[in-house]
Length: 616
View 1 (spheres, rainbow, N blue to C red):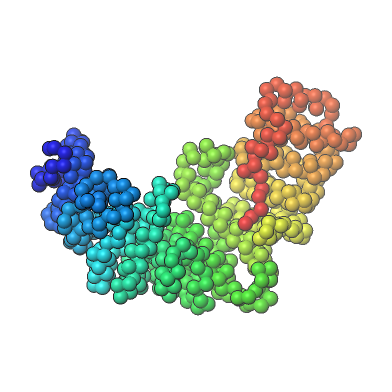
View 2 (tube, one colour):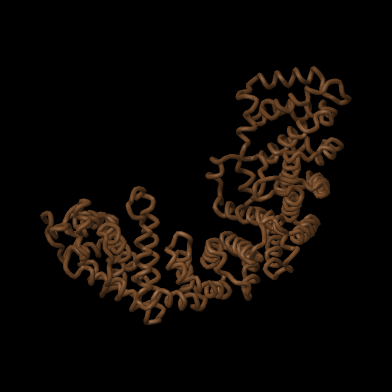
Protein backbone atom coordinates (compact mmCIF):
# COMPACT_ATOMS: atom_id res chain seq x y z
CA UNK A 1 0.00 0.00 0.00
CA UNK A 2 1.40 3.38 -0.99
CA UNK A 3 1.41 6.40 1.29
CA UNK A 4 -2.08 7.85 1.63
CA UNK A 5 -3.85 4.86 0.03
CA UNK A 6 -7.38 4.32 1.38
CA UNK A 7 -8.09 1.70 4.01
CA UNK A 8 -9.86 -1.38 2.66
CA UNK A 9 -12.37 -3.74 4.25
CA UNK A 10 -9.73 -6.46 4.03
CA UNK A 11 -7.38 -4.30 6.12
CA UNK A 12 -10.02 -3.91 8.83
CA UNK A 13 -10.88 -7.63 8.76
CA UNK A 14 -7.20 -8.44 9.20
CA UNK A 15 -6.86 -6.04 12.11
CA UNK A 16 -9.88 -7.36 13.99
CA UNK A 17 -8.99 -11.00 13.39
CA UNK A 18 -5.40 -10.39 14.43
CA UNK A 19 -6.15 -8.52 17.65
CA UNK A 20 -8.88 -10.96 18.73
CA UNK A 21 -6.62 -13.94 18.03
CA UNK A 22 -4.83 -15.86 20.78
CA UNK A 23 -1.71 -16.10 18.62
CA UNK A 24 1.12 -13.79 19.62
CA UNK A 25 2.45 -13.69 16.05
CA UNK A 26 -0.92 -12.65 14.62
CA UNK A 27 -1.29 -9.93 17.23
CA UNK A 28 2.20 -8.68 16.42
CA UNK A 29 1.49 -8.61 12.68
CA UNK A 30 -1.80 -6.80 13.27
CA UNK A 31 0.00 -4.21 15.38
CA UNK A 32 2.39 -3.48 12.51
CA UNK A 33 -0.53 -3.13 10.09
CA UNK A 34 -2.25 -0.74 12.49
CA UNK A 35 0.83 1.47 12.71
CA UNK A 36 1.05 1.61 8.91
CA UNK A 37 -2.63 2.45 8.45
CA UNK A 38 -2.52 5.14 11.14
CA UNK A 39 0.35 6.78 9.27
CA UNK A 40 -1.10 6.33 5.75
CA UNK A 41 -4.84 6.89 6.12
CA UNK A 42 -5.94 7.90 9.64
CA UNK A 43 -9.23 9.38 8.46
CA UNK A 44 -10.25 6.35 6.43
CA UNK A 45 -9.12 3.99 9.18
CA UNK A 46 -11.15 5.92 11.75
CA UNK A 47 -14.28 5.82 9.58
CA UNK A 48 -13.94 2.11 8.87
CA UNK A 49 -13.42 1.20 12.54
CA UNK A 50 -16.33 3.38 13.63
CA UNK A 51 -18.60 1.56 11.17
CA UNK A 52 -17.48 -1.80 12.58
CA UNK A 53 -18.60 -0.73 16.06
CA UNK A 54 -22.20 -0.36 14.90
CA UNK A 55 -22.84 -4.03 14.08
CA UNK A 56 -21.38 -7.51 14.27
CA UNK A 57 -19.88 -9.78 16.90
CA UNK A 58 -19.63 -8.18 20.35
CA UNK A 59 -15.93 -8.96 20.75
CA UNK A 60 -15.16 -7.62 17.28
CA UNK A 61 -17.13 -4.43 18.02
CA UNK A 62 -15.29 -4.01 21.29
CA UNK A 63 -11.93 -4.55 19.55
CA UNK A 64 -12.86 -2.01 16.87
CA UNK A 65 -13.62 0.57 19.58
CA UNK A 66 -10.29 -0.07 21.28
CA UNK A 67 -8.43 0.34 17.98
CA UNK A 68 -10.41 3.47 17.13
CA UNK A 69 -9.18 5.11 20.30
CA UNK A 70 -5.63 4.18 19.33
CA UNK A 71 -6.10 5.98 16.01
CA UNK A 72 -6.99 9.22 17.77
CA UNK A 73 -4.33 8.77 20.42
CA UNK A 74 -1.47 8.04 18.01
CA UNK A 75 -2.31 10.48 15.22
CA UNK A 76 -4.69 13.04 16.63
CA UNK A 77 -3.08 16.08 14.97
CA UNK A 78 -3.39 14.74 11.42
CA UNK A 79 -7.08 13.99 11.94
CA UNK A 80 -7.83 17.71 12.04
CA UNK A 81 -7.82 19.30 8.57
CA UNK A 82 -5.43 22.05 7.68
CA UNK A 83 -6.88 25.28 6.36
CA UNK A 84 -6.52 24.04 2.77
CA UNK A 85 -8.30 20.78 3.57
CA UNK A 86 -5.21 18.57 3.31
CA UNK A 87 -3.95 16.12 5.89
CA UNK A 88 -0.78 16.83 7.81
CA UNK A 89 0.78 18.42 10.88
CA UNK A 90 -1.00 21.65 11.77
CA UNK A 91 0.93 24.88 12.22
CA UNK A 92 -0.24 27.60 14.62
CA UNK A 93 -1.65 29.50 11.63
CA UNK A 94 -3.50 26.42 10.40
CA UNK A 95 -4.84 25.74 13.89
CA UNK A 96 -6.40 29.18 14.10
CA UNK A 97 -8.24 28.51 10.83
CA UNK A 98 -9.07 24.82 11.36
CA UNK A 99 -12.52 23.81 10.17
CA UNK A 100 -15.03 22.36 12.65
CA UNK A 101 -15.29 19.16 10.56
CA UNK A 102 -13.33 15.93 10.39
CA UNK A 103 -10.84 14.79 7.77
CA UNK A 104 -13.31 12.56 5.96
CA UNK A 105 -16.80 13.81 5.22
CA UNK A 106 -19.20 12.07 7.56
CA UNK A 107 -16.57 10.82 10.02
CA UNK A 108 -17.99 12.87 12.86
CA UNK A 109 -21.49 11.50 12.33
CA UNK A 110 -20.11 7.97 11.96
CA UNK A 111 -18.36 8.32 15.31
CA UNK A 112 -21.56 9.46 16.98
CA UNK A 113 -23.54 6.66 15.38
CA UNK A 114 -21.00 4.13 16.66
CA UNK A 115 -21.43 5.59 20.13
CA UNK A 116 -25.24 5.51 19.97
CA UNK A 117 -25.27 1.94 18.70
CA UNK A 118 -23.08 0.72 21.58
CA UNK A 119 -25.32 1.95 24.37
CA UNK A 120 -27.11 -1.33 25.02
CA UNK A 121 -23.92 -3.43 25.21
CA UNK A 122 -21.84 -2.39 28.28
CA UNK A 123 -18.56 -3.97 27.16
CA UNK A 124 -18.73 -2.18 23.82
CA UNK A 125 -20.20 1.02 25.26
CA UNK A 126 -17.34 1.79 27.62
CA UNK A 127 -14.76 1.33 24.85
CA UNK A 128 -16.81 3.38 22.38
CA UNK A 129 -17.05 6.12 24.99
CA UNK A 130 -13.25 5.99 25.32
CA UNK A 131 -12.82 6.38 21.57
CA UNK A 132 -15.38 9.13 20.98
CA UNK A 133 -14.39 10.98 24.13
CA UNK A 134 -10.73 10.90 23.10
CA UNK A 135 -11.65 12.10 19.61
CA UNK A 136 -13.73 14.94 21.04
CA UNK A 137 -10.99 16.07 23.38
CA UNK A 138 -8.45 16.07 20.55
CA UNK A 139 -10.81 18.17 18.42
CA UNK A 140 -11.30 20.62 21.29
CA UNK A 141 -7.63 21.06 22.13
CA UNK A 142 -6.00 20.74 18.70
CA UNK A 143 -8.70 21.91 16.32
CA UNK A 144 -9.82 24.57 18.74
CA UNK A 145 -13.48 23.90 17.96
CA UNK A 146 -16.47 22.54 19.80
CA UNK A 147 -18.49 19.62 18.48
CA UNK A 148 -22.15 20.72 18.48
CA UNK A 149 -23.36 17.38 17.13
CA UNK A 150 -21.79 15.62 20.13
CA UNK A 151 -23.59 17.95 22.52
CA UNK A 152 -26.91 17.31 20.77
CA UNK A 153 -26.34 13.55 20.89
CA UNK A 154 -25.53 13.59 24.60
CA UNK A 155 -28.58 15.73 25.33
CA UNK A 156 -30.88 13.30 23.50
CA UNK A 157 -29.42 10.38 25.42
CA UNK A 158 -29.90 12.24 28.70
CA UNK A 159 -33.53 12.99 27.91
CA UNK A 160 -34.44 9.34 27.41
CA UNK A 161 -34.13 8.73 31.15
CA UNK A 162 -32.99 5.16 30.44
CA UNK A 163 -30.13 3.74 32.50
CA UNK A 164 -27.93 2.53 29.60
CA UNK A 165 -28.16 5.89 27.83
CA UNK A 166 -27.42 7.80 31.03
CA UNK A 167 -24.45 5.56 31.81
CA UNK A 168 -23.12 6.10 28.29
CA UNK A 169 -23.18 9.88 28.74
CA UNK A 170 -21.50 9.68 32.14
CA UNK A 171 -18.78 7.37 30.82
CA UNK A 172 -18.00 9.73 27.95
CA UNK A 173 -17.89 12.78 30.22
CA UNK A 174 -15.49 10.94 32.51
CA UNK A 175 -13.26 10.22 29.51
CA UNK A 176 -13.15 13.95 28.74
CA UNK A 177 -12.17 14.67 32.35
CA UNK A 178 -9.49 11.96 32.38
CA UNK A 179 -8.04 13.18 29.08
CA UNK A 180 -7.85 16.73 30.44
CA UNK A 181 -6.12 15.60 33.63
CA UNK A 182 -3.65 13.59 31.58
CA UNK A 183 -3.01 16.55 29.30
CA UNK A 184 -2.14 18.71 32.30
CA UNK A 185 0.98 16.59 32.79
CA UNK A 186 2.41 17.30 29.33
CA UNK A 187 0.92 20.66 28.35
CA UNK A 188 2.67 22.84 30.89
CA UNK A 189 2.77 25.84 28.54
CA UNK A 190 -0.68 25.44 26.99
CA UNK A 191 -2.37 28.76 26.19
CA UNK A 192 -5.70 27.28 27.29
CA UNK A 193 -5.91 25.03 30.32
CA UNK A 194 -7.01 21.53 29.18
CA UNK A 195 -9.88 21.41 31.69
CA UNK A 196 -11.31 24.58 30.15
CA UNK A 197 -12.50 22.56 27.16
CA UNK A 198 -14.19 20.04 29.44
CA UNK A 199 -16.04 22.76 31.31
CA UNK A 200 -17.05 24.27 27.98
CA UNK A 201 -18.58 20.95 26.90
CA UNK A 202 -20.35 20.57 30.25
CA UNK A 203 -21.73 24.10 29.97
CA UNK A 204 -22.91 23.41 26.41
CA UNK A 205 -24.71 20.27 27.56
CA UNK A 206 -26.34 22.17 30.42
CA UNK A 207 -27.56 24.80 27.96
CA UNK A 208 -29.53 22.06 26.19
CA UNK A 209 -32.58 22.58 28.42
CA UNK A 210 -30.64 21.72 31.58
CA UNK A 211 -29.82 18.23 30.31
CA UNK A 212 -26.73 17.80 32.50
CA UNK A 213 -28.49 18.85 35.70
CA UNK A 214 -31.36 16.49 34.95
CA UNK A 215 -28.90 13.67 34.26
CA UNK A 216 -27.03 14.07 37.54
CA UNK A 217 -30.19 14.57 39.59
CA UNK A 218 -31.64 11.34 38.21
CA UNK A 219 -28.37 9.39 38.38
CA UNK A 220 -27.68 10.32 42.00
CA UNK A 221 -31.06 8.82 42.92
CA UNK A 222 -30.29 5.58 41.08
CA UNK A 223 -30.82 2.50 43.29
CA UNK A 224 -27.73 0.97 44.83
CA UNK A 225 -26.10 -1.83 42.92
CA UNK A 226 -22.90 -2.99 41.31
CA UNK A 227 -23.53 -0.85 38.23
CA UNK A 228 -25.03 2.14 39.99
CA UNK A 229 -25.21 5.44 38.13
CA UNK A 230 -24.70 7.32 41.39
CA UNK A 231 -20.94 6.77 41.54
CA UNK A 232 -19.98 8.33 38.16
CA UNK A 233 -22.61 11.02 38.74
CA UNK A 234 -21.00 11.85 42.09
CA UNK A 235 -17.58 12.13 40.49
CA UNK A 236 -18.96 14.47 37.84
CA UNK A 237 -20.71 16.51 40.54
CA UNK A 238 -17.32 16.93 42.25
CA UNK A 239 -15.89 18.32 39.02
CA UNK A 240 -18.74 20.80 38.64
CA UNK A 241 -18.65 22.28 42.14
CA UNK A 242 -14.91 22.31 42.83
CA UNK A 243 -13.25 25.67 43.35
CA UNK A 244 -11.65 25.68 39.88
CA UNK A 245 -14.99 25.28 38.08
CA UNK A 246 -16.65 28.30 36.42
CA UNK A 247 -18.93 30.07 38.87
CA UNK A 248 -21.99 29.71 36.62
CA UNK A 249 -21.60 25.94 36.70
CA UNK A 250 -20.97 25.81 40.43
CA UNK A 251 -24.07 27.86 41.19
CA UNK A 252 -26.19 25.77 38.81
CA UNK A 253 -25.33 22.46 40.49
CA UNK A 254 -24.92 23.31 44.18
CA UNK A 255 -28.55 22.36 44.82
CA UNK A 256 -27.67 18.71 44.13
CA UNK A 257 -25.82 18.37 47.46
CA UNK A 258 -28.85 16.77 49.19
CA UNK A 259 -29.10 14.25 46.35
CA UNK A 260 -25.46 13.28 46.87
CA UNK A 261 -26.11 12.91 50.60
CA UNK A 262 -29.06 10.62 49.86
CA UNK A 263 -26.91 8.57 47.50
CA UNK A 264 -24.32 8.08 50.25
CA UNK A 265 -27.04 7.05 52.71
CA UNK A 266 -28.34 4.43 50.28
CA UNK A 267 -24.98 3.12 49.12
CA UNK A 268 -21.96 4.25 51.21
CA UNK A 269 -19.40 2.83 48.80
CA UNK A 270 -15.86 4.09 48.35
CA UNK A 271 -16.54 6.22 45.26
CA UNK A 272 -19.52 8.01 46.80
CA UNK A 273 -17.76 8.55 50.12
CA UNK A 274 -14.71 10.02 48.41
CA UNK A 275 -16.92 12.25 46.28
CA UNK A 276 -18.73 13.49 49.37
CA UNK A 277 -15.44 14.22 51.15
CA UNK A 278 -14.19 16.26 48.18
CA UNK A 279 -17.43 18.20 47.79
CA UNK A 280 -17.74 19.04 51.48
CA UNK A 281 -14.11 20.17 51.58
CA UNK A 282 -14.41 22.35 48.47
CA UNK A 283 -17.75 23.95 49.34
CA UNK A 284 -18.81 23.43 52.97
CA UNK A 285 -21.36 26.24 52.78
CA UNK A 286 -23.71 24.23 50.54
CA UNK A 287 -24.57 21.90 53.42
CA UNK A 288 -27.46 22.78 55.69
CA UNK A 289 -28.13 21.80 59.29
CA UNK A 290 -30.62 19.03 58.44
CA UNK A 291 -28.40 16.13 57.38
CA UNK A 292 -30.91 13.38 58.10
CA UNK A 293 -29.32 9.95 58.45
CA UNK A 294 -26.05 11.02 56.85
CA UNK A 295 -23.99 11.43 60.09
CA UNK A 296 -24.90 7.94 61.28
CA UNK A 297 -24.18 6.41 57.88
CA UNK A 298 -20.79 8.11 57.72
CA UNK A 299 -19.90 6.97 61.24
CA UNK A 300 -20.81 3.37 60.44
CA UNK A 301 -18.80 3.56 57.21
CA UNK A 302 -15.78 4.89 59.11
CA UNK A 303 -16.07 2.08 61.67
CA UNK A 304 -16.58 -0.71 59.12
CA UNK A 305 -13.49 -2.86 59.58
CA UNK A 306 -14.29 -4.88 56.44
CA UNK A 307 -14.33 -1.81 54.18
CA UNK A 308 -11.34 -0.49 52.28
CA UNK A 309 -9.25 1.99 54.31
CA UNK A 310 -9.70 4.64 51.59
CA UNK A 311 -13.49 4.49 51.97
CA UNK A 312 -13.25 4.72 55.75
CA UNK A 313 -10.85 7.64 55.44
CA UNK A 314 -13.29 9.48 53.16
CA UNK A 315 -16.08 8.90 55.69
CA UNK A 316 -13.94 10.31 58.51
CA UNK A 317 -12.98 13.33 56.43
CA UNK A 318 -16.63 13.97 55.55
CA UNK A 319 -17.69 13.80 59.19
CA UNK A 320 -15.09 16.34 60.23
CA UNK A 321 -15.77 18.68 57.31
CA UNK A 322 -19.51 18.56 57.94
CA UNK A 323 -18.88 19.28 61.61
CA UNK A 324 -16.83 22.33 60.69
CA UNK A 325 -19.53 23.48 58.27
CA UNK A 326 -22.18 23.13 60.97
CA UNK A 327 -20.50 25.58 63.35
CA UNK A 328 -22.50 28.67 64.11
CA UNK A 329 -21.66 31.39 61.59
CA UNK A 330 -19.83 34.37 62.97
CA UNK A 331 -17.95 32.49 65.66
CA UNK A 332 -14.27 33.27 65.87
CA UNK A 333 -11.93 30.38 65.19
CA UNK A 334 -10.59 30.81 68.70
CA UNK A 335 -13.98 30.84 70.42
CA UNK A 336 -15.03 27.72 72.26
CA UNK A 337 -18.17 26.60 70.46
CA UNK A 338 -19.28 24.65 73.51
CA UNK A 339 -20.17 27.97 75.11
CA UNK A 340 -22.89 28.64 72.56
CA UNK A 341 -23.85 25.41 70.80
CA UNK A 342 -25.39 22.25 72.17
CA UNK A 343 -23.74 18.98 71.35
CA UNK A 344 -24.94 17.90 67.92
CA UNK A 345 -25.67 14.44 66.61
CA UNK A 346 -22.89 15.03 64.10
CA UNK A 347 -20.36 15.67 66.87
CA UNK A 348 -21.45 12.55 68.74
CA UNK A 349 -21.02 10.40 65.63
CA UNK A 350 -17.62 11.96 64.88
CA UNK A 351 -16.32 11.23 68.38
CA UNK A 352 -17.70 7.70 68.28
CA UNK A 353 -16.11 6.92 64.92
CA UNK A 354 -12.79 8.41 65.99
CA UNK A 355 -12.62 6.29 69.14
CA UNK A 356 -13.59 3.17 67.21
CA UNK A 357 -10.81 3.67 64.67
CA UNK A 358 -8.24 4.18 67.43
CA UNK A 359 -9.44 1.01 69.15
CA UNK A 360 -9.05 -1.07 65.99
CA UNK A 361 -6.01 0.22 64.12
CA UNK A 362 -3.29 -0.48 63.25
CA UNK A 363 -3.85 -4.05 62.12
CA UNK A 364 -1.28 -6.76 62.82
CA UNK A 365 -0.41 -6.80 59.10
CA UNK A 366 0.22 -3.06 59.11
CA UNK A 367 2.39 -3.47 62.19
CA UNK A 368 4.62 -5.98 60.42
CA UNK A 369 5.00 -3.51 57.54
CA UNK A 370 5.62 -0.63 59.96
CA UNK A 371 8.26 -2.55 61.90
CA UNK A 372 10.32 -3.16 58.77
CA UNK A 373 10.06 0.39 57.40
CA UNK A 374 12.94 2.48 58.69
CA UNK A 375 13.53 4.60 55.61
CA UNK A 376 11.99 5.47 52.24
CA UNK A 377 13.69 2.63 50.38
CA UNK A 378 12.40 -0.15 52.59
CA UNK A 379 8.95 1.45 52.58
CA UNK A 380 8.75 0.97 48.82
CA UNK A 381 9.98 -2.61 49.10
CA UNK A 382 7.73 -3.65 51.98
CA UNK A 383 5.07 -6.29 51.26
CA UNK A 384 1.41 -5.25 51.55
CA UNK A 385 2.61 -1.67 51.60
CA UNK A 386 -0.38 -0.14 49.81
CA UNK A 387 -3.06 -1.31 52.24
CA UNK A 388 -0.80 -0.74 55.22
CA UNK A 389 -0.11 2.82 54.11
CA UNK A 390 -3.84 3.35 53.66
CA UNK A 391 -4.48 2.09 57.19
CA UNK A 392 -1.78 4.38 58.54
CA UNK A 393 -3.44 7.31 56.73
CA UNK A 394 -6.78 6.45 58.33
CA UNK A 395 -5.17 6.21 61.77
CA UNK A 396 -3.41 9.54 61.27
CA UNK A 397 -6.66 11.15 60.12
CA UNK A 398 -8.33 10.03 63.34
CA UNK A 399 -5.51 11.55 65.41
CA UNK A 400 -5.55 14.76 63.37
CA UNK A 401 -9.31 14.99 63.82
CA UNK A 402 -8.76 14.61 67.55
CA UNK A 403 -6.50 17.66 67.46
CA UNK A 404 -9.17 19.63 65.58
CA UNK A 405 -11.86 18.59 68.06
CA UNK A 406 -9.62 19.57 70.97
CA UNK A 407 -9.26 23.05 69.49
CA UNK A 408 -12.98 23.18 68.80
CA UNK A 409 -14.47 22.87 72.29
CA UNK A 410 -13.86 22.06 75.94
CA UNK A 411 -16.76 19.64 75.75
CA UNK A 412 -14.96 17.67 73.04
CA UNK A 413 -11.80 17.63 75.18
CA UNK A 414 -13.75 16.12 78.06
CA UNK A 415 -15.27 13.41 75.89
CA UNK A 416 -11.95 12.62 74.22
CA UNK A 417 -10.31 12.32 77.63
CA UNK A 418 -12.95 9.83 78.72
CA UNK A 419 -12.45 7.92 75.47
CA UNK A 420 -8.67 7.83 75.97
CA UNK A 421 -8.99 6.41 79.48
CA UNK A 422 -11.44 3.80 78.25
CA UNK A 423 -9.07 2.79 75.45
CA UNK A 424 -6.19 2.38 77.90
CA UNK A 425 -8.29 0.03 80.03
CA UNK A 426 -9.01 -2.32 77.12
CA UNK A 427 -7.03 -5.50 76.60
CA UNK A 428 -6.39 -5.02 72.87
CA UNK A 429 -2.97 -3.55 72.14
CA UNK A 430 -4.48 -1.34 69.43
CA UNK A 431 -6.68 0.33 72.02
CA UNK A 432 -3.72 1.01 74.33
CA UNK A 433 -1.76 2.40 71.37
CA UNK A 434 -4.65 4.71 70.43
CA UNK A 435 -5.33 5.71 74.02
CA UNK A 436 -1.72 6.80 74.57
CA UNK A 437 -1.59 8.90 71.40
CA UNK A 438 -5.00 10.44 72.09
CA UNK A 439 -4.11 11.31 75.69
CA UNK A 440 -0.84 12.80 74.42
CA UNK A 441 -2.76 15.22 72.19
CA UNK A 442 -4.81 16.30 75.17
CA UNK A 443 -1.61 16.94 77.12
CA UNK A 444 0.22 18.84 74.37
CA UNK A 445 -2.31 21.00 72.55
CA UNK A 446 -1.32 22.55 69.24
CA UNK A 447 -3.05 25.67 67.95
CA UNK A 448 -3.79 26.27 64.27
CA UNK A 449 -0.68 28.46 64.00
CA UNK A 450 1.50 25.71 65.48
CA UNK A 451 1.91 27.09 69.01
CA UNK A 452 2.03 24.39 71.67
CA UNK A 453 0.71 24.53 75.21
CA UNK A 454 1.15 21.82 77.83
CA UNK A 455 -1.59 20.77 80.23
CA UNK A 456 0.53 19.72 83.22
CA UNK A 457 -2.19 17.57 84.76
CA UNK A 458 -2.75 15.63 81.55
CA UNK A 459 1.04 15.47 81.00
CA UNK A 460 1.55 13.74 84.31
CA UNK A 461 -1.34 11.40 83.58
CA UNK A 462 -0.08 10.36 80.16
CA UNK A 463 3.51 10.04 81.40
CA UNK A 464 2.41 7.53 84.01
CA UNK A 465 0.34 5.65 81.41
CA UNK A 466 3.30 5.58 79.04
CA UNK A 467 5.65 4.17 81.66
CA UNK A 468 3.17 1.36 82.32
CA UNK A 469 3.25 0.48 78.61
CA UNK A 470 7.04 0.33 78.27
CA UNK A 471 6.92 -3.44 78.79
CA UNK A 472 3.95 -4.12 76.51
CA UNK A 473 4.46 -7.10 74.22
CA UNK A 474 3.53 -5.19 71.06
CA UNK A 475 6.16 -2.92 69.46
CA UNK A 476 3.57 -0.34 68.38
CA UNK A 477 2.51 0.19 71.98
CA UNK A 478 6.11 0.43 73.17
CA UNK A 479 6.81 2.95 70.40
CA UNK A 480 3.69 4.96 71.31
CA UNK A 481 4.81 5.08 74.95
CA UNK A 482 8.19 6.43 73.86
CA UNK A 483 6.46 8.86 71.51
CA UNK A 484 4.58 10.28 74.48
CA UNK A 485 7.81 10.91 76.37
CA UNK A 486 9.60 12.35 73.34
CA UNK A 487 6.81 14.80 72.53
CA UNK A 488 6.46 15.95 76.12
CA UNK A 489 10.20 16.51 76.40
CA UNK A 490 10.27 18.41 73.11
CA UNK A 491 7.48 20.62 74.47
CA UNK A 492 9.77 21.38 77.45
CA UNK A 493 7.63 19.37 79.84
CA UNK A 494 9.67 17.65 82.54
CA UNK A 495 6.94 15.24 83.66
CA UNK A 496 8.54 12.15 82.07
CA UNK A 497 12.01 12.87 83.48
CA UNK A 498 10.98 12.39 87.08
CA UNK A 499 9.46 9.01 86.32
CA UNK A 500 12.32 7.91 84.07
CA UNK A 501 14.98 8.93 86.59
CA UNK A 502 13.22 6.94 89.30
CA UNK A 503 12.73 3.86 87.09
CA UNK A 504 15.34 3.95 84.30
CA UNK A 505 15.51 0.22 83.64
CA UNK A 506 12.43 0.01 81.32
CA UNK A 507 13.82 2.81 79.14
CA UNK A 508 17.25 1.19 78.98
CA UNK A 509 15.63 -2.04 77.86
CA UNK A 510 13.77 -0.21 75.09
CA UNK A 511 17.06 1.24 73.88
CA UNK A 512 18.00 -2.38 73.17
CA UNK A 513 14.66 -3.37 71.63
CA UNK A 514 14.73 -5.87 68.77
CA UNK A 515 12.74 -3.48 66.55
CA UNK A 516 14.79 -0.72 64.97
CA UNK A 517 12.03 1.88 65.21
CA UNK A 518 11.48 1.24 68.91
CA UNK A 519 15.21 1.17 69.60
CA UNK A 520 15.80 4.47 67.82
CA UNK A 521 12.90 6.11 69.62
CA UNK A 522 14.28 4.84 72.92
CA UNK A 523 17.67 6.42 72.18
CA UNK A 524 15.91 9.64 71.25
CA UNK A 525 14.01 9.73 74.55
CA UNK A 526 17.21 8.99 76.46
CA UNK A 527 18.94 11.84 74.63
CA UNK A 528 16.10 14.29 75.33
CA UNK A 529 16.06 13.22 78.99
CA UNK A 530 19.81 13.78 79.31
CA UNK A 531 19.44 17.22 77.73
CA UNK A 532 16.44 18.18 79.89
CA UNK A 533 17.72 16.87 83.23
CA UNK A 534 21.41 15.95 82.94
CA UNK A 535 21.95 15.70 86.71
CA UNK A 536 19.07 13.26 87.29
CA UNK A 537 20.11 11.08 84.38
CA UNK A 538 23.81 11.27 85.27
CA UNK A 539 22.98 9.44 88.50
CA UNK A 540 22.39 6.40 86.29
CA UNK A 541 25.38 7.12 84.07
CA UNK A 542 27.23 3.91 84.88
CA UNK A 543 24.27 1.76 83.83
CA UNK A 544 23.58 3.91 80.76
CA UNK A 545 27.17 3.50 79.54
CA UNK A 546 27.28 -0.19 80.35
CA UNK A 547 23.86 -1.22 78.99
CA UNK A 548 23.31 1.25 76.14
CA UNK A 549 26.15 3.47 74.98
CA UNK A 550 29.03 1.01 74.78
CA UNK A 551 26.94 -1.81 73.19
CA UNK A 552 25.58 0.59 70.54
CA UNK A 553 28.81 2.45 69.85
CA UNK A 554 29.42 0.25 66.81
CA UNK A 555 25.84 0.20 65.47
CA UNK A 556 24.48 2.19 62.55
CA UNK A 557 25.45 5.83 62.05
CA UNK A 558 22.27 7.17 63.65
CA UNK A 559 22.67 5.11 66.80
CA UNK A 560 26.37 5.98 67.17
CA UNK A 561 25.61 9.68 66.77
CA UNK A 562 22.85 9.48 69.38
CA UNK A 563 25.10 7.65 71.80
CA UNK A 564 27.84 10.23 71.30
CA UNK A 565 25.46 13.07 72.16
CA UNK A 566 24.11 11.25 75.22
CA UNK A 567 27.67 10.69 76.44
CA UNK A 568 28.47 14.38 75.95
CA UNK A 569 25.46 15.37 78.07
CA UNK A 570 26.32 12.95 80.86
CA UNK A 571 29.94 14.10 80.84
CA UNK A 572 28.82 17.60 81.82
CA UNK A 573 27.91 16.34 85.30
CA UNK A 574 30.83 15.29 87.51
CA UNK A 575 31.07 13.31 90.72
CA UNK A 576 27.50 12.10 91.20
CA UNK A 577 26.58 8.80 92.87
CA UNK A 578 26.04 6.16 90.21
CA UNK A 579 27.69 8.27 87.54
CA UNK A 580 29.81 6.85 84.76
CA UNK A 581 33.49 6.15 85.40
CA UNK A 582 36.46 7.44 83.45
CA UNK A 583 37.16 3.88 82.38
CA UNK A 584 33.69 3.64 80.84
CA UNK A 585 34.13 6.90 78.96
CA UNK A 586 37.44 5.67 77.55
CA UNK A 587 35.96 2.33 76.54
CA UNK A 588 33.04 4.06 74.85
CA UNK A 589 35.35 6.42 72.98
CA UNK A 590 37.45 3.52 71.77
CA UNK A 591 34.37 1.72 70.49
CA UNK A 592 33.25 4.86 68.67
CA UNK A 593 36.61 5.40 67.03
CA UNK A 594 36.94 1.80 65.96
CA UNK A 595 34.70 2.23 62.92
CA UNK A 596 32.55 5.31 63.53
CA UNK A 597 31.69 7.53 60.60
CA UNK A 598 29.71 10.76 60.27
CA UNK A 599 29.53 13.79 62.48
CA UNK A 600 27.96 14.21 65.86
CA UNK A 601 24.87 15.80 64.30
CA UNK A 602 24.12 12.93 61.94
CA UNK A 603 21.49 11.50 64.26
CA UNK A 604 19.38 14.63 64.30
CA UNK A 605 19.57 15.01 60.52
CA UNK A 606 19.02 11.38 59.58
CA UNK A 607 16.26 10.91 62.10
CA UNK A 608 14.35 14.03 61.08
CA UNK A 609 11.40 11.93 59.87
CA UNK A 610 11.38 10.09 63.18
CA UNK A 611 11.34 13.17 65.35
CA UNK A 612 7.97 13.86 66.98
CA UNK A 613 6.09 16.58 65.10
CA UNK A 614 3.02 18.54 66.19
CA UNK A 615 -0.28 17.17 64.93
CA UNK A 616 -2.19 19.24 62.43
